[in-house]
Length: 185
Image (cartoon, rainbow, N blue to C red):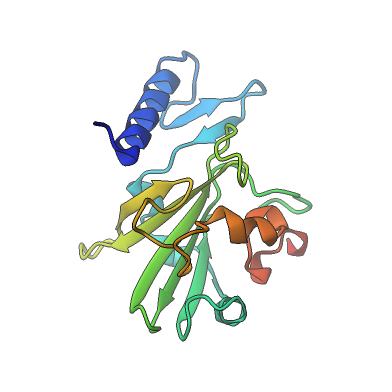
């Protein structure tokens, strides 16, 4: 019997294979849109490499107000800022949230703007839990990814709601940190 994780991996592999066979594409893990721009991005562990060198924001105060990551220092890292005047984050945006020093010693979650109509709950966003590798290269492994945590896992301490519920309430294309408000760029 195929588990949900296996189905997600198979779907991602199929999407990659179809994108690679599309002819005229940009290669890699993107599919070219009608206007030539990339409108689908599937993130792999290598895409998170070096996230500590990305633009960083201390979002500890906002996390405490939302009653998550209690007692933690929470940093958010973004791979590239959105263009000025954007009303949504562009496809290929990666935001990593790392909480350290709280009741759970170390948590790393990420949201990736995947595009292509993925995730009807919060359009185009894919959710990840990551763990650091001890390779000295600022690398991570993906613990889970998809629409939210798999059965038996939690996000933000709530085993029932997953990621979409709270992030949808934030507005700002689902990005809750006020430091990453689209109207500030």
